[in-house]
Amino acid sequence: MPMHNFSFHFSRRHVLAACLAALPLAAVAQAFPTKPVRIVVPFGAGGVADLTARTVAQKMAEGLGQPVVIDNKPGAGGVVAGDIVAKAEPDGYTLLLMSNGTAVSANLFKTLPFDTLKDFAPVSTLGYFDLAVVAAENGRFKTMGELLAFAKANPGKLNLGTVNIGSTQNLAAELLKTSAGLDFQVVPFNGSPAVLNALRGGQIDASIEILGPMMGQISAKAVRPLAVMGDHRATVLPAVPTLAESGVAKFNVSSWNALAAPAKTPRDVVARLNREALAALNSPDVRKRLEDLNVAARGSTPEQLAELLASDTKRWGEVITQAKIPRQ
Image (cartoon, rainbow, N blue to C red; front, top):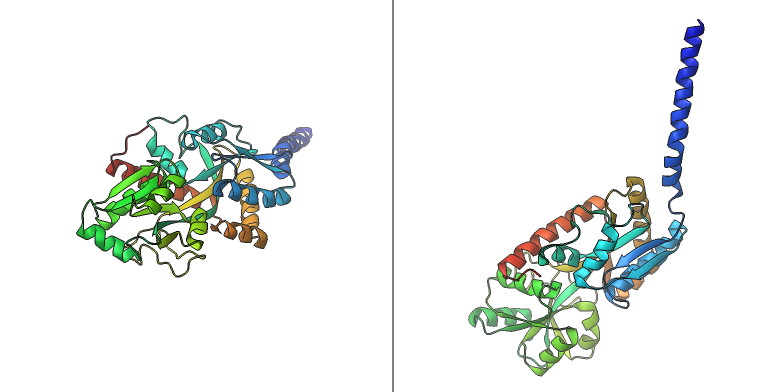
């Protein structure tokens, strides 16, 4: 009988000890966050991606009960920012503003200090923004159909301008060549102002640009939008067709931003960050502010973001190989 009692008390003590040992871990998960959260942004202040991050961060801070601060670390195609987050403690306090550029960089550089698909824990997409094909208002092309017909009838004669080789705009132009089965010149420039000057000066026939920053030029009748490159017409330009509607079947390219944490961040912490990101994106004031930036607020599950990153990494890798763009 005493032995039986001893065994009972021994078992109960072990159960209690196990429960007490587990308490700190549960408390940590429930307590997150207990200090400010940092989002490392691979772009300078003031751009669409930076303003998207700031808008969402401000609302997330309300839900988290802690400040969410933006840390701009531009340079090297997002590699600097990515490296900081990949090597940070996996505790949810250091996040990366990912973009489709993250997928491009995975293929554009010979070596990276991190593995794009393995060293991050996806949290959620934040928003999508359109790219558009634009021409000079007084140029030869009034519609996307006219531009495509000219390119088909005159191989190698059409000049399409973009910003730097390897940018989303530049790779979208290369993808358009292969998707439409066309032969035209993709002319890279060092920045959007140079592209716009060449377009208005007649040195190029059209260009591919992120739509938001071009809206001022479109409103001023300096440039004419011929098509948007995503799978939906742009809210701000409902009369402008998509490329798919213009004859390039299934063409769909848009820029996106998302949040990711370092790999091995606890699942409970990722889930909490995901909940707060989705709550922020569902907030009417956040949606309105993003809409003013021509960004469509759209969240996701961590799994959906992982799938998007993997598919974009594969797609842009194929485009870079096909276009024979040298790795940097």
